[in-house]
Amino acid sequence: MRPEMRQAAAGPRAWEPFGDVVSFPGRTAAEGRRYCVPVLTRRQRRYAVVRRGVELAAALALAVVFLPWVLLAAALVKLTSRGPAFYLQRRVGRGGAVFTIYKLRTMRHNCESLTGPRWALPADPRVTPLGRLLRRTHLDELPQLWNVLRGDMSLIGPRPERPEFVARFEQLIPGYGSRLLVRPGVTGLAQVQVGPGLGFGVVWQKLAYDLYAIHRLGPRLDLRIAAGTVLHVLGLPMGLVRVLCGLPTRAAVEAAVQEEARAKWAA
Picture: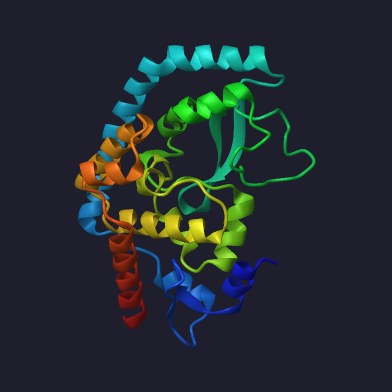
């Protein structure tokens, strides 16, 4: 077991996002998960209903616009590598419900048949040459618009994780299950402000951004994330995206989420 896994499993920490430990003696990890759960206000719940109608219209419009590109990319996937054009995978959604996510296949077919579930690596050798282009342009994510229309996902929210990883993270990271309070998203605050990476440090950091966004669910932050997503897809650096879109700094996210965790423990 890695050192960070042993550390997370050993201590009853309520919140430990970036090594700055906020420790609450005598609390269990289960209590930590309960106290870290954000609670949506009545206004946020009303906004969530309106937001669902808006994102259905937006997802339908985007699906119509990008359908030719998706079909062209799917044909190229079939022509350049063995296996299906689309990749179906189980992910965990709101309330812990498991659903099937749709993506254009960017890796070799059945590449996990010998290794089992595993994270994608930087310069992952399983990725096909065409898959690298699809990932760089984010075209492989467009089929998830179907998940939005089905009600599995939102346009904006925490990224859905695989059941095998969620079960482990919930055991090792207090508060991780709080991400399941809302529908997962095609994009989100963590996606436009935290780069790809491996290890529990990155998981902690993305969780902090996810909880920050859930606590502040509303049109202002959603519009900023949407604008940030467009700039991110266009290739702008994350720091510049943050400045142009008025997104919070890492220090602000860390301070806000730790303060919210302290307030819940004190209540």
